[in-house]
Structure formats: structure tokens, C-alpha cells
Length: 438
Image (cartoon, rainbow, N blue to C red):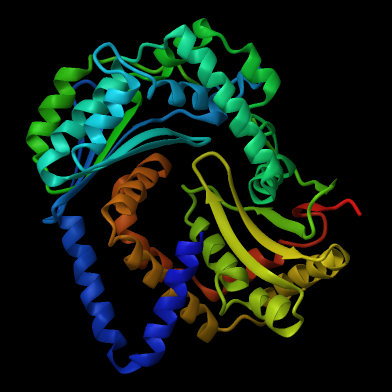
């Protein structure tokens, strides 16, 4: 999030200094995106794996192997099992110990990590070009041949218990878990990481069953950005995985709105997060939600940053973000303030939605569009971020859509944004506040 905000600030500063040249830069950016799109390949392999590849003439290759399954397809009694499986894949395979997995990547100059989300579980590495095939071999080994050693599983369970404590004890992590619970029942009402109760209930049999049901060829997406041989990669993944369907299924997601205040000793600041439902990623209006949230709290030039921090000095941090996904979607606005100011901050947020619905003009809309397009271009500079961009786009709609972001954002009309803003009012949003007990 901080990186996005810094990028926005940089682009605005750059634009102010070089306004005369900005149109030529946009022209250059447009052709750069067109070149990237022309260098993009998507293939569905004979075993069902989806392969995404963007060719780049740089000495680095970013690779992710992702499973189209995450928290929102888990039974509530097993919440956290996808995240548990992810952890276990780093604990050793039939041919590599946990240390060997790390050494094969890091001793060859690469980076290795992974993540679990509500939609996907991903394992990625970033390698020097001359070593990318080693990275591919390690990732394939991890997702194909994990040991799930029972002793290692019990040790890792303790690690996850500590991670649960970390999420709870860190106010920012905690409030973003809680705002999702305020917005949804069903599959999303328990944190992605699980609870002590659910984690204690997961044994090796359940881990193996989850792995066998979800880690299948037709549930696999591979995304590679960099200087690599797509034909060689295609052959490698076709030979490494047999065709197998996925037995996973999405659990019911129920929308709601709730306002909740939690008190905690040992903190000095109230952490407020305001959330509201947004169109799903497949809906063209999801981009309207992105524009609306940027107008409100997308950087130091935003309306709420000006109203809450600059004019009234009520907060240091005023930020916004979006969780726009395939099966659920919401925007959030975060403010860190004094306990006594939370009601005023809430009212200021609502007041600004009303102002946007009534008085937003074309000049401000076009300025925010330029901001978002600039952020979009900056995000593509790093192959690792671009890898995630393409993967997310494939999960939500199709990867090719990512390259059309600028075209789609420029289609958004003033009336679209004003209409969406008008829907956020009393009773139509969620609020979670973590405040000092005394």
C-alpha cells in the first residue's frame, strides 16, 4: 500500500514539473503497453494447466505457480487449511529438504516466497535469467511432491499459532481481518489464517485430502515474466503433470453490514476502517469503484486526506484500498485518530461521499484517471509485480484484460462515479474501530 501511495505522489510531482511533456510520455507509455501485450502468450496445456507468459529482454525471470483455491472454498470447520498446506510445501519433498529448497533458489541468486488469499494459493520465485530453470524445477517439485511429514506438520502448526497471535496483536492486520467479517457472513466470516480451534482440528489426513482435491492440473495457473523459452516451459509442465480435475467448490458468501467497536489495552490510537461493498471484478463497474476510492483517499491529493489531516489535523494516516475479486468485492478507507475523534471521522467520510455524488466534476475525474493510469504504468516496471498483475487478472476474468486497463478506465463517465458514491450512506456500509480501553 505504501508503495502505491509513493508511486502516486511521484507521478503527480513529475506531472507538475513536466506538464508540457506529459502527452508525449503518455504516448510512449501507450506504445510500451502495446509492446507488452504483443509479447504476451496464453496457452491452455493438454493437461489443463493455464500458462501465462510475457516475454521481456531483461536478465531476470519472475515465476509463479498458483492454485485456484483459497480461503473462500474452505469449510468453516477447516478454515486456515489452505494456508496450512502452503506452509507445508516449503517443508520438504521426496528429493529436497526444506533447507535444500531454499538453497537451490537463494544460492543461485534468487528469491522464494508464497502466499495464500481467499481466491488463490501461490508459490513464486524471482531468478537471474541464467538460473530460471532451477526455479521452475523447485516450484514444480514443491507443488507436485510434498512430503507432509507428520512431525514437521506439528512443528509448523505451532508456527501458525504464533502467526495468529501476530495478526491479532498488530492493530493494522487485525482491523483488516475484522472489517471483512463486518462485511460478510458465510465463507468469509472467519479469518483466512484460521483460528486456534480450526487449526487444532486439522490433521494429516485432512491436509492430504485438501492437497489431492485442489492441487490438480486443471486448477493450476503458471505465470512467467522475463526472458524465458515458452516452448521449453510448455513441454516441462505438460510432462510434469497428468490431467486431473479439481474437486474444490466455492462456499456460500453472504453480504452484510455491521458496525463494531473493540477496546484494547496497550494502544494509544484508535484505528478506524470504513468498508463498503463494490462490484465484482467481472463487472465493468468495478473500475468505477477503484476511481471512487482513489478520489476519496487515494494519496495526499485525495479529498479525505485534505479534510481529515490537512484541514482538521485529526490523523496522520488516511489511506484507502480495494479488494476487488471474482466472488466478493469491497473498498476500504483507513484512518488512525484519537478515540474522541472517531465519530467525527465517520461523519466526514459520509459527508465526502455525498459531496462526490453531488459536485464531482470532469476536471477532478480526469485528474484521478490520470493518477490511476500513471500508477498502472509504474506497476508494470517490475516483473514480479507484473507477474501478480497478470495472475490476478486471469483469476478474475482473463489475463489479457490487464492490458486494456487504460482503455477501460477512460470509458468511465462522471455519472457512473456520482451514482456509486450516492449509494454509500447510513446503513449501507460497515465500520470497525479498534480503540484504547482507557
